[in-house]
Image (cartoon, rainbow, N blue to C red):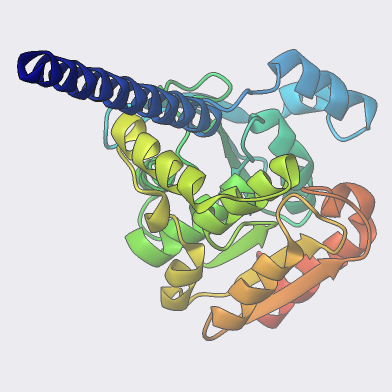
Length: 320
């Protein structure tokens, strides 16, 4: 009787251990699977087809391929600090005058920046277009929403200075991720541009990811965020918590024009308002009445250009 009891007891304990191990392995598999899915959505976000972007911008009258081809320009490969090669175009209709470097948004490529470039070419600036890493013609394994891209931007700036000399004057315009990139560049790498125009950036990446979870799932579980952060660090080697333009902007001394549309529900306009409040020194804010995410110019072109004119005039940035 005693021997049978001990044997049954051992069997029950073994069975419980097996069940516990199976449950632990199952939980680990779910955690790993969730982490892989969330980090894949972040690191390898689906990009728009290049031809689709060209077709969209052409049909909207924002891109004239023939006019673009006729501009005096030189294409170049710029190598970032980690060896990633970036396709860049240096456009010089006004030799000797200031430049504007354009940073496109996530999933886009340099053709999306042409409409902004045209605004500045009309005002006597030259331009630099480039594809962010993993976008357009540039190399790159993953997207980091400004973490690695801020160093790519520095490489483009360095190449401009190498070509034009240390006296060259330039500004930087960015849309969405491009706006985040320029704020991180100015606030954590070097505040070297004469001015910055940040169109619809997020203020904190973790908060932006939470917002997207709420849009898609209806809620934002802290557990999911913890898994996403762990998986992004493991696979992408950057920390989501470090992507904080709100902290970076406090260290920017040169003028910044912040732009957002009031109807944007992808990156909330409150994020740009917070950035504007946090930025010390010279700054301006334009909140467009119409348009969703990254549509402030497309839906409010006249007001957008008037805002740029006021900004350039106030801080004596108009080319002479």
